[in-house]
Image (cartoon, rainbow, N blue to C red; front, side, top):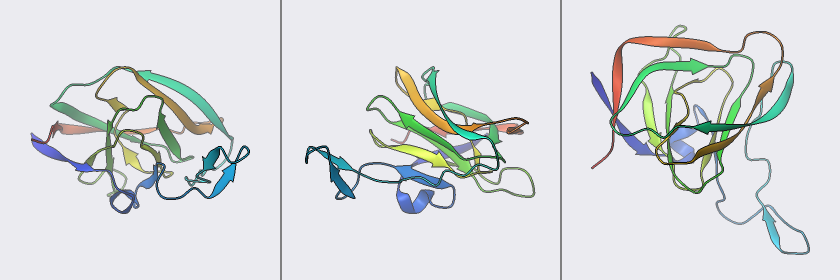
Amino acid sequence: MTVLHLQSLTVEAFAPFGDVLEVAGDPDKIINQGLCGRHHDLAQLDFADGKAGISLFNAQARSFPIALDMMERHPDGSQAFIPMTHTPFVVVVAADDNGKPDHPQAFLTQAGQGVNYHRNTWHGVLTPISTPGLFAVVDRIGKGPNLQEHWFETAFQIAQNA
């Protein structure tokens, strides 16, 4: 079993796979009579057809070591995961290698960070490491299949960094 070590989720490291959603730096706009900073248009939402929808996911927390035996991608739309609690979660992504995931990379978010996977990006399933695992998800709602899965012959193991 190959061990994946967690990396910190940064805008630069994650750029090939999607967008990091976080409040960083000064807001783009000040709204609501000066009481709210708006960090504007943080993700590249991309849908081949259909429409953007918002769903709520309530996922069970995982414990380390975490087995990664499957990755998925959505060819017709991007997919954003926005935590509704202030806790980190694990994000796994991989480049495409002729229709299957290349070597996966595992990231640990900071509390308050979310991600938006670009369309057709291989990624692991939603992996909270604490409860509740409550997320708002923005993705494509439309007709036709928008899910491809790849099951690994040998699972990877995601280790908690020392």
